[in-house]
Image 1 (cartoon, rainbow, N blue to C red):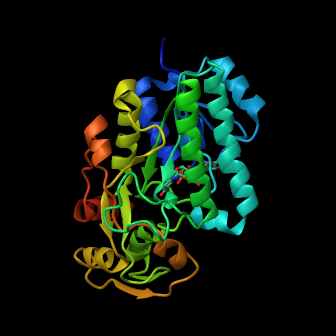
Image 2: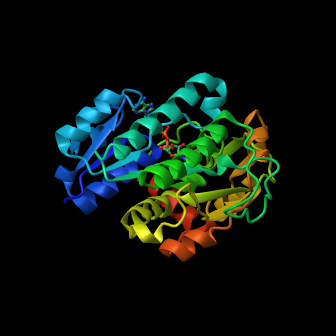
Amino acid sequence: MNTKILIIGACGQIGTELTKKLRSIYGLENVIASDIRKLNIDIVNEGIFEVVNALDFNQIEHLVEHYKITDIYLMAALLSATAEKNPAFAWDLNMNSLFHVLNLAKAGKVKKIFWPSSIAVFGPTTPRINTPQFTIMEPTTVYGISKQTGERWCEYYHNIYGVDVRSIRYPGLISWSTEPGGGTTDYAVDIYHKALKEGTYECFLSEDTALPMMYMDDAIRATVEIMQAPAENIKIRSSYNLAGVSFTPKEIAAEIKNHIPEFTITYKPDFRQKIADSWPASIDDSCAQRDWHWQHQFDLASMTVEMLENLK
Ligand code: NAD
């Protein structure tokens, strides 16, 4: 059977890049992009696009039947910082959209699901350095609680109903072509924009806050690779740890200074500092390396070159 893909949340930071990549691999006619609104002209105009609400099971089911979808990538969610401002709605969106696609797979209407988790599943009691795949998970944000719960349900649907669901715990993602969607790691995108435009940046995290991050190209490649891996290689059906590069605001500022010597940074931590403090500083992704041969490519230096070049 041909692969026919539905991406829900295709106009977001990850969805935009993922849609472009999947269209280039599987062909324009085999990738249906969707979002709650027509938010990105390229995504809407370059291929098939449908408006869909991830909370409406009937709408998703209709698209699945109409286009004979085999694989769903569910990218719609409320992210960490935004979710804290509207916990009840974040819970509703993040959980019920997942149930909708899991139930479609359980009913045999789609074959494969990709659902992103996050480093936000970890909490203040988790070992912070080189956080293992299996460890204490006591998230303190509604976003983290929704992702951890989502992971449990993914594993359950796989174990009990045989659903082929695959997931990655993305670290903070850094990209130049789309704006980030309201997460705690957004500063690492903003800083490049402000460095080029204004030569200075006020950071909402303190200078020594180390967080796991990843350049978008690596994250998209990981997403494609885990979905293309043979099912028997995917041993973990909750979600895989994934590591790219870890750095602090001070370190990224120093790297930017190598290219823009006059760049300055100041620090004014806000409510996001508390969220960042509850997350790991670095991640052990040896299970992903072992099971589906994951290897990241971009480090802080090569990512900075790419970001500055492209944003210019
Ligand atoms: P984003 O906020 O940039 O994009 C989400 C998209 O979903 C938006 O285009 C939005 O319009 C759409 N959407 C929202 N509600 C919808 C609804 N009801 N129906 C249909 N579409 C809806 O988010 P992102 O950064 O692209 O993240 C995508 C996924 O990856 C999320 O599950 C997020 O939790 C996860 N993730 C992201 C990061 C990151 O750094 N960006 C890190 C870890 C995990």
